[in-house]
Image (cartoon, rainbow, N blue to C red; front, side, top):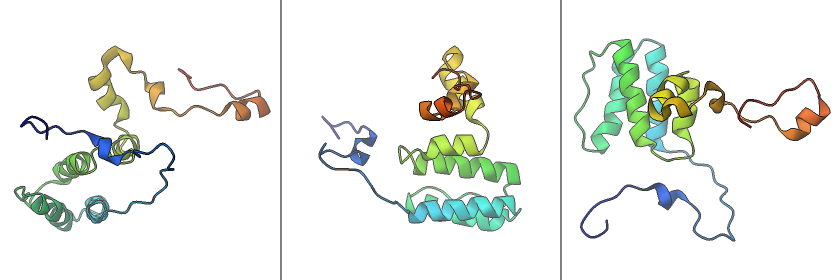
Length: 141
């Protein structure tokens, strides 16, 4: 909060002292519920999936979702819940987009012509390319 306005910024997740290394393992209870919910969706058990999502929503003071959601609607609700629940935490959004194969669709909307499909690829280490001349660097690196 600053001058009566509330701002959302993920700075609290960054190391504030340059002499410290940021090494940690983070397991959040809410993430575990969301992982189980996604598993249940893929098993076509949407009732249990929605119940897990509703636990997270209830903790945040949000209205519960209907347990009568279709599989696709349930998956959409889960991905939206992951998006807001895991905001700015350790790259969850990036990995969700890659895992669900929706990276290009979402990033094209956000970045327009600045986004290329190859932007989602990691660079091949130069040492690997030196060891194997048949390797070609991923585009844009």
